[in-house]
Image 1 (cartoon, rainbow, N blue to C red):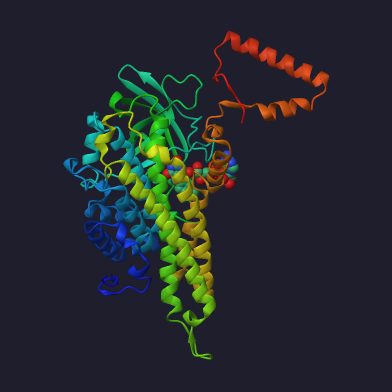
Image 2: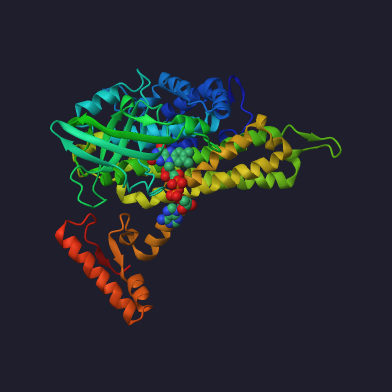
Length: 478
Ligand SMILES: Cc1cc2nc3c(=O)[nH]c(=O)nc-3n(C[C@H](O)[C@H](O)[C@H](O)COP(=O)(O)OP(=O)(O)OC[C@H]3O[C@@H](n4cnc5c(N)ncnc54)[C@H](O)[C@@H]3O)c2cc1C
């Protein structure tokens, strides 16, 4: 294997010995090398300014477009690179590790939006036109899902809705967080469906352009991923033509399970893994150079420091292999990311493995914070200073745990479904937990029970007169 270089010089961080290059095709390895050079010359210098001055990384997107990376997943006949899931993970990895983590996250959201459009582009000329413009016009997309009222439960957009008009839709979207808000050129937004009747699992997705959104980028100021500009977004009753609904009405939950979640979880995991690798690279450069003349040793010669690195590399590579194996599985399931399989609108091969994507994100986001912390320790006081960049990687990596689905939510999902089955997850609060209900009622005296019964009967009377906003709840044995 050739040795890793950077701008013609030997690379000072970890070499290929600790990279799983065997998951990439020769063509993907060449792309990786070209992208690494671009990271060194353009993306990384911009990352420093972006972090210090809260600059949105549009210049970095222009550089990515020069390699055709905005259309990475777009089929060749529509002008894209027609690449697969493993390649998507590799590109995000490379940007995060050698270039700019904020750009890697904005790019992750872009890929998620591109995938959501590709999923339903087969018979939609508006989406096909959009997908052909990505690199030529540096046409950046993003996903706007999170709602101010439901926080990290981003699948529950209570503040958003859509209505049918004579020639299309009127969309009302209120998002508390949207990466690239106000900077992206197009947005995939999710609302309840136009014929919403109280069932919050009835969701629809819409394509909204930049001049139709209101954003507040001046309010964005965060610990890390500072170039990411994940601010609020408002689509205030914008009227759009019918073709700008992505997929049929009510397709939102399918789009989430088959596309948005798998792509976001795969690519964001790749981002967290390589923020960890980036911190290891920086720390390696430092500890192999810094000497203590009193004992005649480099910092890297201390067994304690070697142990830090050994554990960081092993844990991070376990997360990388876990993530990449999910990319390989997605490639197997979709004949190498062939979008034509979705001509059959019921084709949902990725969604059967959603619980595996939850696991890769949890592991990656947990690992990155620990590894960056230990790498900072290994660099001592020097690591604490801004010029070494390790503190930036530490701050950027901290976003992993809190980004939805948060790690608290993910371990709940995995633990609960492992113990009680997937139906116990009840994303949209549609099932009554009768165990809890009976247990609480048991604590009441006769008078308390009578008052509750009267209150419930009064509610039933009101609901009988006007259709209930919330759908009937389904009894469950959870
Ligand atoms: C850098 C960054 C970029 C982002 N970009 C986007 C974007 O592009 N698009 C988008 O739609 N959103 C985006 N988000 C939003 C993100 O997905 C989450 O919605 C958001 O971080 C949640 O923040 P909150 O303050 O509402 O948390 P809350 O939901 O209020 O959570 C508070 C705490 O409660 C915990 N909690 C919540 N629900 C449960 C539960 N059921 N069980 C156990 N614990 C629970 C959480 O884990 C957390 O610890 C971004 C967030 C960040 C930090």
